[in-house]
Length: 197
Length: 197
DNA sequence: CCTCCTTTCTCGTAAGTTCCTCGTAAGTAA
DNA sequence: TTACTTACGAGGAACTTACGAGAAAGGAGG
Image (cartoon, rainbow over all chains, first blue to last red; front, side, top):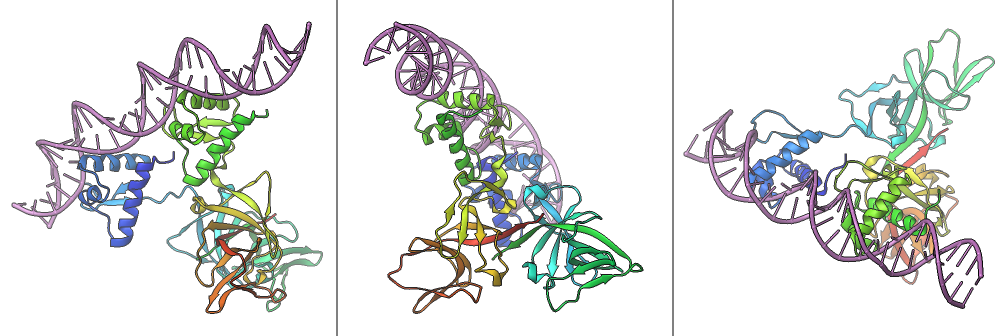
């Protein structure tokens, strides 16, 4: 499944060329760039990598028509941003976020946290959270909850008088869910990810 | 079930090669790396370990097709715990921690944070951090630093008068590195991981 | 201590596969 | 035309697999 060193080098060249010049290279440029002396060699690589699923052509016979395919096998969809008291802001051309392979499971997705309502649990603005979609939760778990259409990330505390949703920030109030609120748990927090630099 | 020492050494070589280079070695490379002088020897080990269930091939006759069975291919070694002002407490039979594949690179490893000296950056006790081993850092980056044998995770601020290491917790002092301290940067923080439940 | 026996490990070599490279030439679009 | 992509076949380099002979290492019994 993993690439041979030479194929990896070929892909890496495509990537950096694309990055630097804003367009894919021609076969000739690849040949020179990698020190080959035949276009046949370039073509051989292109076909191989196409077969392996790392490459695609935007048009038949097109010039500069090579396109890299990002492997989405290791990623989960970033469904949107979640902020206290707002609906989940869907991200249109959904990005994909790489996560530890243990979380590559059905019913898992990623949200980006917006705001600081959970700062007491050291979940900060911009962090990514892996969520497992499910409707039940244990007391004390951190859940994505939907109240009257508004989504929020909070700690879940079922009580005799009704459900409480606790933020972890003194500036935000505890939310009391009354029986005539439209309330649903959407998922529970499984993992937090923060990328630096 | 238990391996002979030589077989263990063989497996260990595969593991570290994979970790450092991002791909499995060829038979030739194993031979040189372990100081053998025949490919037959390498082949003997491969067959034995395959029979014992520690190894598998991703393809028949494939090059660089060796794969360790308990796929640590998706993990980085957990080298130890890092606490403010203590040497890194090495974890002997090093565990492996799954990380997002983007961090599966040479020179990357994982530490577990112990203590709350960086709580202001919302890095809390028990969190895992992915570190890239390198000796340089930019101002303001969070680094693993070694001062007189003690390891610590701190923000790095080079000043005219010398280097400052800032904790993110008012209970801890800023560390001033003097020229006669034995000081080294060990690596920089690349990613933070927190697992729930 | 030594001797025999079994298991573990080593060597060299050669054949077999796959991966990669080349040169050349035909095809396609502006 | 010019600038590029696509196709084909031959061949060498890189790498794996197979085989047979035997050396080292460890344990049991004298």
